Length: 392
Image 1 (spheres, rainbow, N blue to C red):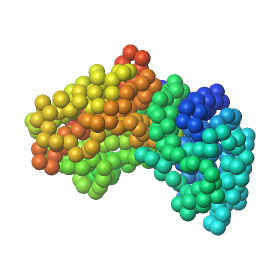
Image 2: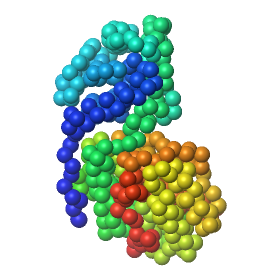
Image 3: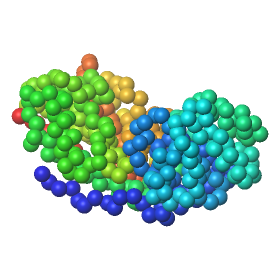
Image 4: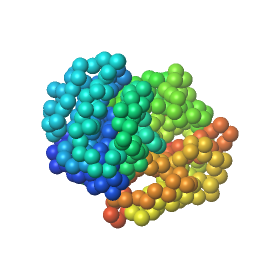
């Protein structure tokens, strides 16, 4: 087994969180927001570094307030205090949870009322690509009790803040991309026809862990003669046979950061039209990579990829986008679509994911992970083979 380079140091320096907070506060002043209320794991972790698997439990709400000046304030269940004390945050307020009748809301209200009131506006992530991880009745109670405060959506602000990665964040994503690339490249040595999709993905998951991945929360597959008709539902118990094409897509994690890319494999000789479809999506990825540079938009990259697919005989693409942001979540803003038009900036990590229906019910999809640099783009995943790997 080839070894991936030594892993990056876990966690971040305090200066990383200070810079994130100060950057957010500059935008908050522009938006005339006194504070932001954050409730989800990626948001809380972004500003605090609080990394725990305990978010898998839906029982307790967690709150983080970003004031207009100063450090974030944590309002969290008592069970999380010891862990939060390991972070750079020193104002930690807690209650014994769960208490469904008042699960931290009184404490949260009191904390918000202590904050300086300059604009009379409180931000919360209420818009696109956001969720409110607290009971709706509690949020409505918060609004009622703060009747003189205007609640404004800061989802777009958070999406923009998280979309541009620091060097330290990019290093973690690069590492997990290289780790997963090495696992993909080694896969033909450990799998064979006659195995099920489920068996193959189990073998890859074990290999990823042995290489240093923390976990693989997303690993899916699809297969069929010449191609596949779905890219999100597997693995299943289908047995791989000669003439099949199989796609594997993984979102593997190191220190809280994802990779997200796929690889295609042929079992025995591949048909001419499947081979041509693979070459087309591969060349489409090249076109997207060439178009990805500062000042270009997500739509420019989409158009570069779609032009190749269209010329290659694509019957369509029903996925809705051909790439997206990547980082502390498997998929992040922005989306690569015909209408998104988000300008690319240095530090953005995105996926290139062209896909095409090349025959009725048959798809071919290819995905790589890249980072936008000052001069263009850099591959984070190790580039796939230009010809589909064959497993005998």
